[in-house]
Image (cartoon, rainbow over all chains, first blue to last red; front, side, top):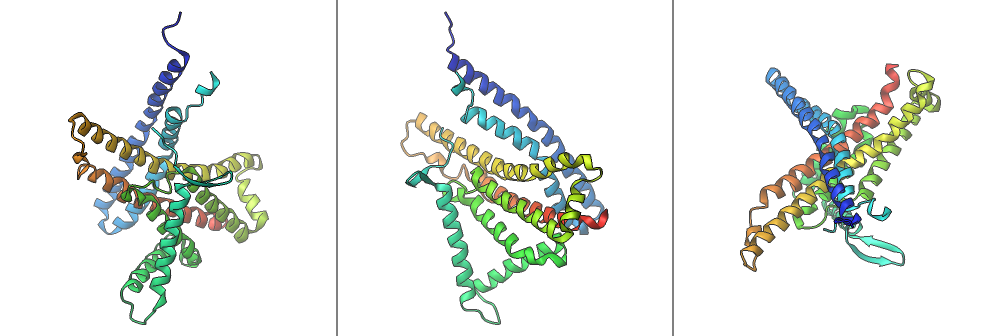
Length: 88
Length: 234
């Protein structure tokens, strides 16, 4: 006799999976921080180029963010639109 | 917790969600502003005409400095996209669901961008040059380059959708938590909602909305210009 119903097991494991997926955010934190630090260096060296540096930094950070956004969407799907419940 | 947009009404099998309704509202606001600000044009601008001229000048400068002076004919589309995204992203200020917190909206916009990139690339370097550019540096790299091109609308739409939806979820959690605290103190009026969510509102509905709109339009401009001019380098 089982103590845990299959639905509860799948839901719990999905929540764990959603949490583990979000570890991928670690990378963008480091990457965006690195880009911002380099931008600060650039502005300190050339204060007149601040507008261009800011624009380039924002676009670069947005592209670096993509992997984290994919991780976030996988996490949302696991939490709110779970595909495994219908397989039971 | 219900995450999808609510269905306002449906015509037969066609469901009209709040995303579509708010997109209409944003479009009507934009069209009304354009009509009002250009109805009584004077040589010395004042009132709404001055504000509209400020916006137009800003957009033209942005497009000119990003895509090059010869591509300013893209400015009307870019400007419309930018203003639509700013207004659509910041609907959370009115306690409504942002238009772009729906994958359908962002994917449609990314589809327009994708079509513009490839249409202008083919138009500016002919079909032969376009295929030659795709099979660069070696012909057997063609499938890999194709996958790379097809991944672009996916990534740009998911980026906008993910950022805005993350904001929506965090705001919902914040409001829910504050309401729960006041209910725990057995006070019927959720007085904690006054002022406390304000910094989060500012970040997600003003700062993040403008930033994501800027990034979407910026990437659109960069990729269109890139596709049109990359022939000169090879």
